[in-house]
Image (cartoon, one colour):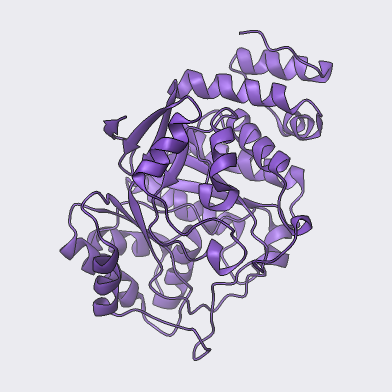
Length: 364
């Protein structure tokens, strides 16, 4: 298919993409700079169609946040509470099982678990969370604890990250979510999440997980103090690790949410930035099978648009998402399978229900 380029500067990049050559950070900066967004989208769509055809994947999953108590003070977070602060909570096993049973349906295939860095409880608490869910729901995949949480557990338990992951796998851990990555540069992390894992530590946690046989996820939280170059450095670091381990299943660009629900448009990422970042992610991350459009952050309509900008996944039902909604996310906290299918078909794509590992459950 010939792309009608409006910007002649894109000709060399178009040639590289069509020949399967890896784009450089400089190429990525040009893609961010060009006014010809639709040509960027078309190139990304072509790459995605070669990898995934018209298939767009989704999963029925449940989001669980066992605790919101956190030692870290990330400047973008409205979810965390300090010990004893109003609204602070830590679920015990009974609370956890009640939370799940109150929201349960038999189609749920995955528990997506992220919490605070709660140093008021021991590492065993986090192991017990996994064990409890596996005992009562043995057929549901446990996707739990970010790379940053793995580093935190190692500190509070006096273990190596490898030992932490081995213990979690014994307890029933199946995969790591992609959170805690934010932007993988030290300038960003020093300003935005200084108490959390460093760039190298986050990447090391995932590399160790891949070495232990886990397939994992990767995210990028963009739209605050990050520069376009930092976003591209982030993508490059991920694809370098993917070259080494082939352990990542999907990349999820996450639009930063403002701290307040009533924040104006100037405090939110633009539709153009969201669509461009998804398309550039698809073009830069040549060794990733999937780029996810996260409907929680960009909304259902932009998620539909993203399916022609290089995305092949729209995430899942979630049931009750809390972290983005503890700040300024304007979307609903959950969505139904029927709505997900409608969203995908509305973009003239084929809805494919999957499990965590992209095994097909049903094509609609």
